[in-house]
Length: 122
Image 1: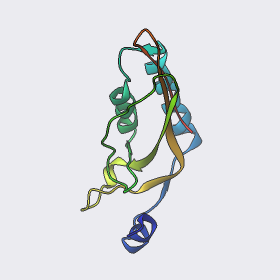
Image 2 (image 1 turned 180 degrees about the vertical axis):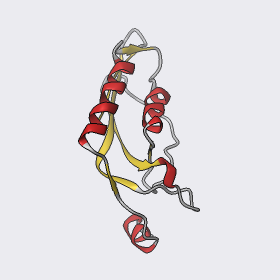
Image 3 (image 1 turned 90 degrees about the vertical axis):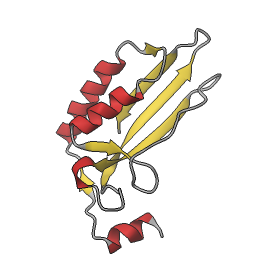
Image 4 (image 1 turned 30 degrees about the vertical axis):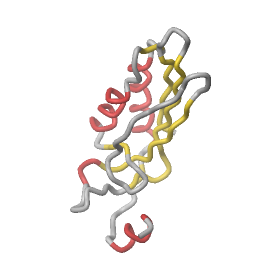
């Protein structure tokens, strides 16, 4: 079943994020990433900021994102995470989608072994 059909069938609301909220969260993400170079990608720190503001990163089926990041050696990897509303999970562990905003993440593993990481809500 397509996600859009599921959402319509189950009358899950599609939510929007205000510009002020996006700006506030981007400032917090920027503070986490201010050092720029990391031994490992601080993904959980970024997810914690989302959750602090009642949002969660999603997979394609609107469930909480679970996975691993790979690559980034010799080229920059880019990942987009759709967002859901944390406190509105349904009985199938699916979240309503936040329309018009995704978390963008770019990372590159340098020869030193450290990662250069950039992330923001766009």
